[in-house]
Image 1 (cartoon, one colour):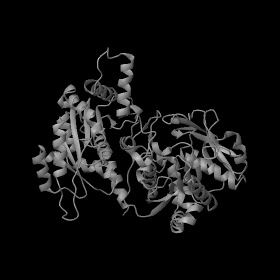
Image 2 (tube, one colour; image 1 turned 135 degrees about the vertical axis):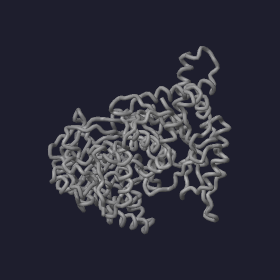
Image 3 (cartoon, one colour; image 1 turned 120 degrees about the horizontal axis):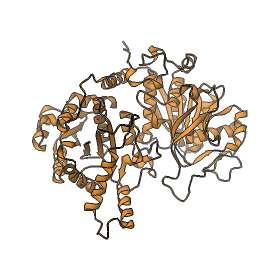
Length: 589
């Protein structure tokens, strides 16, 4: 097993997750099996109780693990399936050590950070690195480990010490450190400054880790003189200083690393068993990255949510939209709308903000209401849903978005004026969305219906069934505490709101579709978590098709796109299921 540790310096949020994913994809393109581990130094057991404004979105895995959003990057880039144990936190480590101490596993010894915490970190990494993450069940050959935060943080010290010891335990020829640092470029002089990187590397070396590659994040390409200066002061060869400047598409980052010889260096440094063959996988990435920069025809989606001030709150949602827009050959424009701005209270208090929000909504080609928690802005979301329903605009509701679509339909079509979710009004005489048995209101973390669950299609004519490839069921990831009240189902279906997807027992409503509408769909699960760059999520794909005016022709052709409408040359197959090796981009000239 070969281990690649990715550390960060100067500031957090510098792009370690994308760089770790990019290193993984270029190694995977060489025929290696790659896995990834994200270490978060916070004391939380997992990311489940975070506010999206605190740490970005909570990413959900097949096994129900609520983890850091960087694991979403790993899954999307590498097309792998990770588990909750691929996200390691200080809380998890201390909890496991304390549990051992309570059981008497340490035989009366004083339990300390060194060696007990550091040993637990190393054991966790070595055990998890061997777990297969690919469909073929093969044990990984390379494990990319991203250490969150920055070098010098108090909370990350036990992890740094653990890996200082770890490099000797697994031998130097099996361990490599990539240090990601910032090269600021002040506007006053325009000069690229190396001092922060020098200080960061000095501190890292003082803690016992020497970087093999220094990846410099900068706004513009690194100047030769700057690269040589970093080389001299940071004790590495100039070829070990890698420039990762700002690019137009994240898909270009792996190509940036490949062009600077990162694969060649890692092969030599770790003696990797690289296959000598054409790098078809990376070629497809290049074609995809080039195509994203050439898309001209716009398609706009109004994202009506609660956490619109921070785009990281909806990372997977945005990625799912981008994947679908690329397939349908349109340039995506996301219009972020704070749902509270669509409400009457805002109209009275801040009329300008109110009218701007409605102008954004009315000028969009489609409407998306993603999941979320809390009562704030729910009335605004229902106003947006009502507008999309009445104006025949493409609409997709995810999780809470689906539940509010049911509430809106109950109020304005069934005439139940106080219809609501018991989450927001426990006294409603028409509780169309109710609490689930799994929900433990006294315990916040991990008490929802989480992870992969099966949804059975109940209709052969369902649009969603066709978009999924006319299958009998789908397995998607869930994260919710409330569900549509199944006892009221027949009232909705009599008026045209069909529950076309239900759980295996038929007790939980999973997918809704509105009859005689261009595209009005709600799903209880979160399809964005399984979307991939070349395998877009069908619900999002349907939304983009409808927004671009291509859904009727797509369905009429048996869910096949013509070559001019996509980058797939397999127009006789369903685009979302197109295999990576069979994709071929078309020239736009």
